[in-house]
Length: 469
Ligand SMILES: C=C(O[C@@H]1C=C(C(=O)O)C=C[C@H]1O)C(=O)O
Image (cartoon, rainbow, N blue to C red; front, side, top):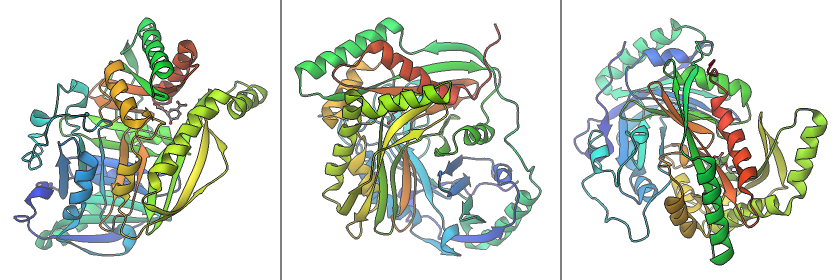
């Protein structure tokens, strides 16, 4: 067992000892053994096209409790890596992994708090508003450069340790031994069973919320709003994020997978199908993903649903809002933008309209500049953006916390990748809250939208055993 080096915060960089990053190539075998190397914060990230990161411990971190959380992390991003001397191949470089709350500043909201970025422990005391217990430990933004990072990139595995120069070599040796002796597979652990379920929203409440949204769309400049619900379940044993992500990977190979430990014992995890942004050098890729129908029981039924997805004016409008918003929000920072052909993304329980988009950015653009420009897209927020967010806050009965917000990583060069944190849940011991939302536009029907919410909740809930009673 290697102890954590104490979790330096980015705001104390002046007192922080210089850190050294050293890496070694790993052979085949399990990377889950990293979990036993440092008994502290953990995170996992895996993109459908390859990169996997597993982090343990805190070498440096940045916590923001101000409402302008994305801009603030962007301004201070370089501090996370300042003073880390990395000697190793680019694949093994340290990455900061983390995320944000869905909501930022309210219109005319509380003034910025300038003293709130120094300590992990003070986060929840200073967080705005009454935070629901499930999101305790998930401030407006938190990013961690881990002490121990395992990277799987292009078929190669690396372990990287970030620590004081006089300790890094020993610690790297200890971590490599721990990984080599670790159990091979953590995906076949016991599956927790659901004992109780509680909905955030009754059927009547949902109908009232959708009616209110449809009325606002008919009578104001609001054109689309995404409304979400939560399902909270009690499990007979705590969620093990690694084995849950392993199972989700089997069912959703075309999705991202992530887990991120908060500072109060909770873990946010999920399998989002939606890319917010991937940026490497001056190239970026994003997508519009919105408009949903179920999968069919038979190939014919499946194709019939897909046909409806292709030809429904309502679903097309829901989708077009997202394409248009991405295009106009990237216009000021993109040198070029190509909108690819619309296609269908088929997942285990649901299928979506998808439009890939890619291009080149102006030089010097950080991946967080793009995150700030895009979030929330109308796939999870609405149109117009700030009016939709205000309506979400007034109509929805839940605290979205980190649900539907950007989750991902960035590096010292401003490259990185973020998914939209949907098909996700937050686990606190044996309590698990799962979230799902739906785009409401003119003509939306509350009962149909409720069915779609069920399909989305199932992506996480189906990974757990059903109650037997
Ligand atoms: C909001 C969610 O999903 C989003 C909403 C969709 C829709 O309204 O059709 C489809 C995909 C996602 O962009 C969610 O899964 O919670």
